[in-house]
Every structure is written in structure tokens, then in C-alpha cells.
Image (cartoon, rainbow, N blue to C red; front, side, top):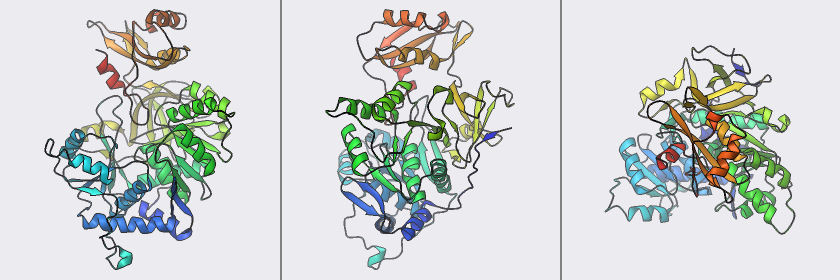
Length: 510
């Protein structure tokens, strides 16, 4: 029998445009988006979205044209995203630093494509066209002032948006292999916001500071869509720094912080290094962390130095949020990554697909109203991703007696050392417990055909030798678990969310 949360979430029969219209009608003068000194009320946001949708339409953007958003965390990003939703466009979020060469590859994969961004960024890309032809229109997000809006007598911006049409093409991180575009509908995203709203009691009185990219899954759903669903205020930082983050939390009386582990780490260190004793922001009631695993040391420092009780959120690009800790759960490692979120069902199964008892390990399968529909252009990968309607996460997990979900590792990531299985995550935890180790990645290197050996790539936070670290491991691990080789690097390759790109680590350590 599958384990599900106590509170089921219905499928919202809606689009993001309907959510915005509802919020604007209910609270037109309430602040929707705040970024430094820029403030948009829900009424103003609704009007700007309609005007921008009208302008996008005048540039020929339709549901048949893939639209890339090349934007940072600004009100323009929120407006452009919701304008694309209003028109029912096929949307592809792009990293602000995406090189033109990668855009060329995407253009070849996605077909007819346009790119929306700030004028300065688009001008820089356009200047390279003679060297690397991209052959797609660039549309500045800023309004040049020469496009008639609906309010000034132009036609109402057309919309073909429907809840279940393909909308968001969100590329997976590629941390363990080739990135693929997971396709989501607007209903998927609305359901995701509904899940967070119900799980954490988000209301129109909340102020959500999103200190992660809005165009990544976590920031988009836990930040933007959740705020939209609740009619809450979304607070953004135009430029991130730990000092700006701490100041914004206080100045804007933020109640919810959405951030990656590295953001909490930087903020905690900055607060501890300040001239005045660190203190928790007065209004802050909820801290959510995702995008990468939350190191226990980071959570402990945040609790001790700033009084922050960080709630780990577990999910993936394909399924959205799956499980999370709640404030009422308290602290402790026995909680794993928390309980399944409202409306999310999980199963832990053996190799034959039979559910295993609590406490036993197996493959983690999930069902959620925020589930993606397919991988773009990868029908075989889509087929392999599902088992009888359940999504195969690729994670190995076990369930606790109270339904807590514990992640054990990635399916296929275990290292075969002389016929004995080594979980790289267990070895990483031992390495990270060393006071001079800042970061560590463990992986298996194929030997002369007889098996694998354990290798570790380490970022040292203080002087440290491979011999010292290996000796440390021998006192805490079984002989076959001890790294056969330790390689030190200055930094690990990561995504913009701080997630280690493991495949790149392997490639850099031949």
C-alpha cells in the first residue's frame, strides 16, 4: 500500500493567468512583487502582464514558438514569465550566463525559438552573430513605449493558454548525466504552489523572499507560484550578498525564506562575522532549503548562530516537491528528508516492484499532482521513467515508522569493490565530518575489469594531506569503503543552485 500525506490535494483546474487574475481582483492594492525600491501591486502586476503579453504577441510569439527567458531575479522576470503563461507559450528558462554556443545547440533542438531578455544582455549576444549564427529573434523585456497596450485602445492580448497544454520546458540539472527537458503544464505548476501553500499554511499575509533563481524549479514553484496561489508578497534581491539578504529579511519583515544550502551557509557566516551579535530576523517563521542536500553542519550553524530552523525540501525537476520537513517535526537526523507533502504518494519497492516494509531499502516511486508529462524529444527516456503510472526517481530510499522518508543514495551509484557494495554518500558523510574538509564527492573508478575502487575529490578548508585523510577514514569505515585515492581541488563544478555536477567531477578526474 502506498504511503501518502494526510491531506490530499485536488488537481487545480486552472492556469497561472487565472491565479493572477484572482489575486488582482481580490487584493488589487496589495504588494505582489518587491525588489529593492521597485514595488508592484497585484493590480499593477496584472496590467503589466497583459501589456507585455500584447507586446510579445505583436512580435509573433505564439504557442508554436519556443520562448527562452534569459532573465535574473527582477520584477521584469516575473512579468515576462506570467505574460508567457497568459499566451500559452512554450517556455524555456535560460541561465543568465548561458553562452551563445549553448543557445545555438538549444535552437537546433527546440526548433523555432525566440529569446526574451534585458537589452544589455541581448545586445552582447547579438554582437557575436557573425561568429556564431543563432538565427532567432531577440526581444527586449523592457517596454520601448511604442506598442499600444490594451488599456490604450489596442486589442486584448490573445490567449490560448489551457491548464494541460505543454508550457514549461525545464532542463534537468545534468548533475549525473545529460540534461533533458522535462515538460510541465500550467496545471502542474499551479498544483505545486498549492502543495506548498497547504503544507506550510502560506497566506496572503506572508512575505516570501526567494533567494534562489526564479527560473529554477524550486524558486519558481516555492517562491513565485506559491506567492501567486496565496496572494502573498514575493520579495526579490536584484544582486545577492549575505548582508543584503539579512537586511532585506528585516526591512521587509519577510516571513518565509526560500534558499539553497549555500545561501544559508553564507548568511550564517556573514552574521557571525558581523560587528553586532547575530540574531534571527524578527518576522521570519519558515526557512525552506532545496536545490542540493542540506549539510547537517550548515543546519546546525544556522540554528546555533541565527536561530534558524531550516526545513529540508526534497524534490526533483520532474516531480516537483516530494517530501519535506515541517516546523512541527522538530530537529534531528532521524527525520530524514521529512514526510511526503500533501497529495504526494510514495512507494519503496524491490527489484520485482513489490512494496517493501518500513525500514527496508528499495527504489523510490512517486505520484504527485505536480508531475511532468514527458521528456522533450526523448520518448524512450519518458517510457523508462514511469512504472504503471508511478515516476521512478532513481533514488534508493526507506520509510521510517511514522512515514518519514530517508534517502540512501542514487540507483546505480553504488560502487562495487570486490563484490561488496559501497554507498558513496556514506563515505562522503565521513569525509565531511573531518574539520578540514569543506566539500567532498565520492565515486567509483573502474579498474582492470575486475570491479571498481573508491575515489574521493575533496575541497579542503584547511591544510590537509591525502595520507592524513585516508588514515582518518580507516578508523571510521570498513576497509573496502576507504578511498583508494584522494584528489584535492580548489572547487567543485556546480549548478547555479549549488548542486554538485557529479558527472563533471568524474570527467575532470580521469
